[in-house]
Length: 159
Image 1: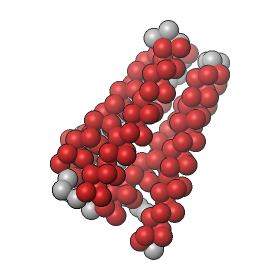
Image 2: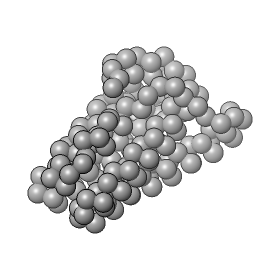
Image 3: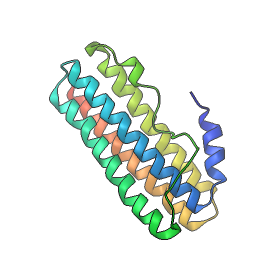
């Protein structure tokens, strides 16, 4: 696992180009994460609404990554790459081995999204560059939307 404060410090030192590359990498990793959660939920025979929520989050993240990567390539003439670990993908999948663990998995995923949202909000307050501030505020909104989707599913399952 990684230190969240360390990641925030690394992100704080990035310029706009590097921060955008980070966002793209994070969205790609998040898409894979939610795709795997959907597969695990399906394999465990959990409600289809949960599988669909995970798949929707995966598709949304993949779509964001594709759109941002096109923008990045047009702006900077290269493919994006980042070595900063994403904030929103905590090691949840390993905890998800039985159907009775679904609430714990959702709680952990929701917590992960909230941590990311708050980190991006804090970064928006700390950076001087207006473009970076806007980028981090957009990231915070994306993570807030992910949190709300997970929360709705959690409540639907009686959480």
